[in-house]
Each structure stands twice: as structure tokens, then as C-alpha cells.
Image (cartoon, rainbow, N blue to C red; front, top):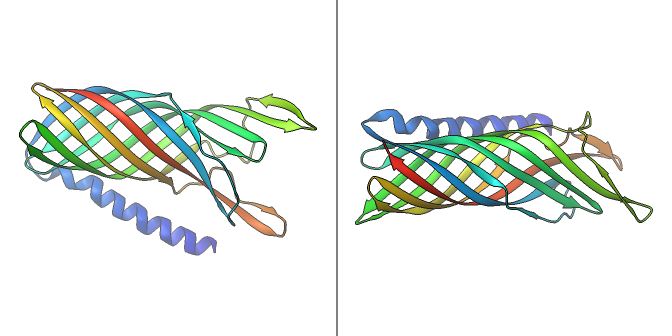
Length: 211
């Protein structure tokens, strides 16, 4: 089971790296900007268990885009965001720094730019806020345990559109992230191993300036 998971992750990472490398094949334009957005997070359990998604309004960052004429570019930056999940009576929220590495396929028509993103992301949890119930009493904690995995990495796909008013561009994007890394170390419970992976829906708006 673990060997199969590793092979699938390796195959997906290789494909994502190829997408990231595509933009550096020709002439480009450079953009820099700021972004703000919202994140909807949940956790995938194997074997399947029920959880609830959480909405986090903290998602800000700086953006750099390298547009390759006429159809492909590269996007990266640094985001400060919040992620989390609800499971049974437990709620967790993480403050993270995130680095996206994305190929961005784009098509420009009139004053609009249509975009598709594909690539990878990595994030590191700076802090955690936990709340849970014990005998009906809400307890809070802000410490990491040995089981927690603070480093997260995975696949990012998405799309959006931009409104061009040179030298500025206003872009609206939506994306989905699936973590290849475990949210917590695999552990044994009820005579079976439990695996956990984060899922995120990201919605953002960015104001870019062409250098």
C-alpha cells in the first residue's frame, strides 16, 4: 500500500515539474503584484471518514508572473494564509507560508486574458490553533505534536481571467490543491492504518503591474 502511494506520488510530481518547466522556452513579459483571497479546506481520510470543510479569509501575498509569448507563462510568489479542518469535535486552523510554482497557459483577446494553471505548491505551518471538547468542555491548544506534519506539498490546478489596462492587470483566479504529503503521520487505529491529506479550494484576486 505504501509502495503504491509512493509510486503514484512520484509520477504526479514528475508531471507537475514538467508543467513548471514549460514557460522557459521563449521570450516573456514580467509582472509583479499583490493578491488577496479566501481558502476552503478539508481533509481526505483513508479509510474514508466524515469531516467538515472550513472557510479561512486570511490569504494574502505577493505574486510574480513571467508571461511567455504567445500562450504560456510561469507564476510564483509567497503567500501568508490560513488552512484548517473540522473533524468530530476537533477544529484546527494553521497559519502557513506558501510557495506556488505554476505554469500558466493564457490567451489574450481584446482587454481580457483567460488563464489555466497547473503545477505544484509547498507550504510550511508556522502556528496552529486547536479546539476540542472533553466531557462537554471546550479545550484549546496551540502546540504541535510529533504526529503533525508542518511541511505540506502537492498539486495545484485552476484557472481564471484577467482584465488588462496597461501597465496594470486585475486577475481573478480559482484553484484546487491536493496535498501529496500527509497532514499527520500515518497511524494505526481500529486495526487499520489511517492516512490524511489536505484539500483546498482557493479563490483570489490580484493586482499586477507590468515591469
